[in-house]
Length: 129
Image (cartoon, rainbow, N blue to C red; front, side):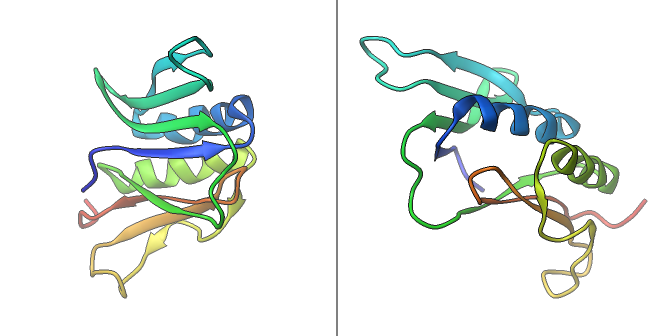
């Protein structure tokens, strides 16, 4: 489990358009939107639930090499919806929704590549209802 993760992205507007759509099925949305200011030299967004921000994006030179981030889904239907929304938002397929028994008997995940080349996953670890 992680407390929060920050990604540096080339184009914050493009990344927001992607993640707004991709994360909507997981009920994760922007809860912090900080423009450039004296205290904030680059624009920053944070996604989360309620008042809890845990996925941050900052417009800056991306780190070298892609990262892998996995978001928890409550249901397999949410994983399916994440995948469809991410593809519709311009993500590239990196693994259609399905059981990944090599990760665990009930591990149901889907993988997409975001606009900066990061591998973004949604996973449900519950058995099918």
